[in-house]
Image (cartoon, rainbow, N blue to C red; front, top):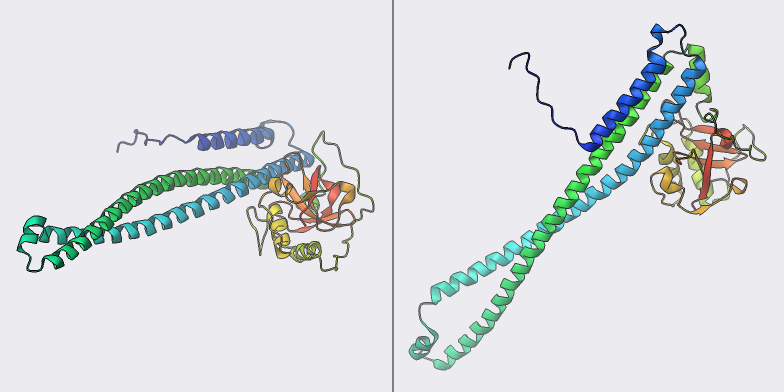
Length: 357
């Protein structure tokens, strides 16, 4: 192919176009503010870098929860498709058996069908025996007709199953496209954040990492929540009453130090909603996968009514969750590059709380 000729490009699907545009705009904005400053007289301050990194990680966490929701739906679509395919295979097996049976009956009738019923009666050595056999054949014919009708119904049902499976396959492909879209957003935000963090000195980065467990200031314009009564920075003792909440809290304590990995549900790593889901699962309580569904699981509670084991949610989009453990403290999986840790509940913009059990 000539070197001047450009390869053909496949048209992008709508979701892919939106993702590409979103990433391009975000990248351009970041580049303008931070990476394009070589022509300016001043570099962004460490505080500006940290604020932008916070924003990028916040975007990545919101996209992670959308990814988690899409993953749930993709898994459901895949299970439904697998079930339809299994059902269709069983239906085809039954149809094939019925077809073989009908084929055998048809072949027998063809071989014995040379003489009409009246002639067969006239030539029979035992007319009574012939009449009895004829009655049996009539009943067999009725059964054959019923079998034919059953096969026809089976063919219709198999066709409907194939149509259903085709629709489920289309749904599965759409869910997988959504997964790829959110994955691209998450990885793009994290990569940009890491490039910005690399601009900081070792001391500045250490300071940022030290507060990344939830001690970050609220975004500009946000109203900082009032500190919970009795809040303190030391870890409160885990409840030991044997309740479900106590078992969930014990699980969360045991997870401290494990790395945050987006989309992870354990046992070696977690994202924020993966940690709370796994903790309550260990106590025998099934929670949905995402922050915005977990907040509606169980009973809503107020900030001043929190008890150990309650789920606490943050940011206007309900994009982060932790587990309250008492004395104004929670255990949560903060963000990429961090580990499960203890943090003050009042360190992030409050969104609500719920009690699963």
